[in-house]
Structures are given as structure tokens and as C-alpha cells.
Length: 213
Image (cartoon, rainbow, N blue to C red; front, side):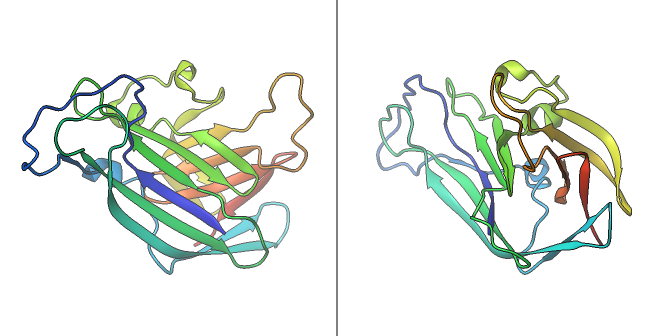
């Protein structure tokens, strides 16, 4: 089972003071249409991945999509705490058994009362916690690894993976930490496409799996 999440979260450690009347409704921060465009899954969807080296197929199913407003927990508030949108998509692998993995987490910050920005991460099977630079992609700013993005994270204008070509594809590499053992057969690289989600992944030895129609 895998879990794909979209959420707006506050990750600033600085105190945030919102002066308001306690009777006023809480401020709400929802994902924009452009941000939502990166969530390409729908409930009940069947996902199939073909193997580039042979005819093997891995299958998955989107079992649940949870869309809710959550309370902003960081900072000090006077009055009602602001709320942020959270979308969680759960995907179950149907041809084998794997532990649940959050496939995507999107987050927004509330800093100095500015418009919240976006944060994201992607996971898949044995590929854990890889930040996605969605905010940079949407705003057209450079991807800076100083902000936690992995070396090798790239935005591809287009990518042909198996039988399909996708536009706006984020490629994320999974590299072992310095001085640690090799990754073995763990997932080495993910491809995440706007409006589609994970469209391909590579295991050891450039062993490619790609989305099938």
C-alpha cells in the first residue's frame, strides 16, 4: 500500500501572531488550481507499470482520496488558528505486498503573514522522503539543493518513458549518504509528472519501470 498526500502545512519555527477577533472565522488556505494540477490521481484508478527489460507488469490501485481542511499548529495565535487544505491519496499495490508509503506530501508555509508557499515530497516503494520542488517549478525559480532538495533533482520539459511522452516531469535521484553501503535493489530514481503522479521509477542497474496506458 502506498499513500499520496497533498497538504498545506506550516514549517516555520518562528512565532506567528495573528491578531483577530475570536468570533471571526479562521483564515483558510486552499491549494490553487495550478498546485492541484500536480495531483493527477482519482479514486479507483488502476495503475500499471511495465518493465523495460521484459514483459513483467506491476499493478496498483488508488483506494482512497481524503480531502480536508486541517488546523495550522505552528506559531502563537490570538483568535482562531488558520486552516490549510490536505489531500491524501492512498495507493495499494495489488500484485505484491508492501508497507504503506506516502507517495506525495505538499505543504505551504505561513511566514510573516505572507501568502503561504508550497512544499512537497514524494515516496515510492523503497524510495523514501524525497522533496519535490513544486513551488520552484510553478514560480519558475531555480531548484536549490540548500533547501533540502536532493542532488540530481531536475525539471524535465518533457520525457519519453515507455510508450508515453510527458511534459513537466520532475526527476529525483535516490543516492546513498557518504560512507554508507550501496542502495542494493532499492529504487534509485523517480519520475513525477504534472497531472499524472509517478510515471516511472528505476531500480539498480538502470532497471526501468514505466506507466502503461
